[in-house]
Image (cartoon, rainbow, N blue to C red; front, side, top):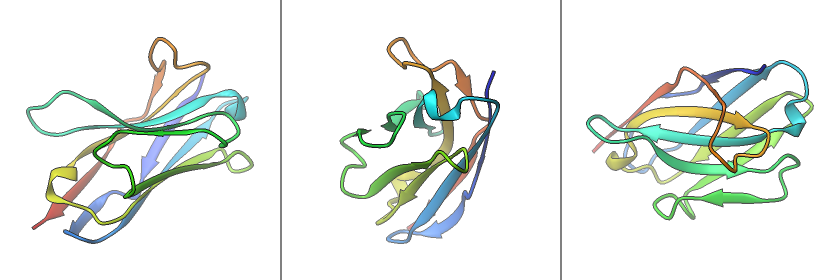
Length: 119
């Protein structure tokens, strides 16, 4: 069992930056693949970024490549999403997710944190 709590959301102007954090409780955090997803109003939830257990492999949606960076600190049971050059279309609720393999989706989800980008 893994509990996930996101933080770091807020309101920023276009072009600004935010760093989201996701703190995990429970054992064996370092064994989990971690991901960030987002859901904008009226849209389906979409994948944003993912990272493997030790951080040496990362994945990004095309829409955020070059602007967002996912990282993790297994000693702190935390995964991060650094978001730069933010655009109004990045506005969404951002969710952290965890799974042992992520080959069939993510089993554990956080409650989400709101990110709003003003133009």
